Length: 206
Length: 206
Image (cartoon, rainbow over all chains, first blue to last red; front, side, top):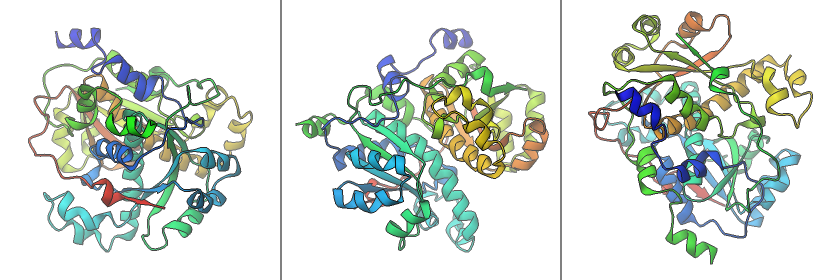
């Protein structure tokens, strides 16, 4: 009975929401003139932060790069093809993982007292945990940005060490991606959507 | 003008959708009797697959572990605290990254002819790309599962090499997470939600 209900009503969110967060959303490089306020970014974060991470570690950090001057500090570290994309975007977010996430664990994961102290000397393990869970959070963030009406243009081609040296020498954050953010102009992309792999192609059952 | 509109209408999806995919969703360990059909998993995948990955690489792979017999092949490789969670869940998905993702790139990324051949000898680079983008896709998948009315219980505590040896010796897939899936019983969790870091705590501006 339950199966039948589920099979005939597959979506549990309305069609417009599914369109906005997945079906009509595109990796965006064409932007309207609408600005991106901190309020709007904070609203997106307040959704994205709720996504699950291992031991509630929440290692994702964001650098909001907005002014022309700040953009010019980021641009030289981007792959050449991504430079005009940073310059054109209303805001570029540098996504980074914070290996010092453990400092918040007394507050974030109170069910495991002592985990902060236990992780403190484990530098390599913390770096790996930070990167893994920050990447997972990046997935939530893309959806959350779209949920507040923003479009996202994630980019991977960049010199991460260069970015870290420029912006994160003190914090120790480790950049892993830049996401351009704004309100899309039209579809947001001049290209047709690339094909995807089907469930049959990616899934096996045992 | 655009800023004003955005600030006073922060969500672009309806409240019920935001509740379902983020605000009311919990890491679930308490399940109703409702089954999880392949149709439902496929519907979730058809949303999740649309999320952006670098060069449209789409390296995430899924092993659907459903029967009691299959569960017993997975259980010994889980951390002890996660074993009863696998046994209790209607379905456990092993999430894995496919380092051989490049074999699909002629189809998936036709704008870059030759990228398949170029990546073929770059085993280490492919493993890193696969892991990075599969983790990003895992974030999309958690949201997509929720979008079709399912709940997710992601778990990190496991022997990944053991899982790979048990299930992926031939495919070469690299497991990185298990996500229990089903319809939540009530809130799905007996615990109160842990706190989160605020935008102010995670974001800096330049």
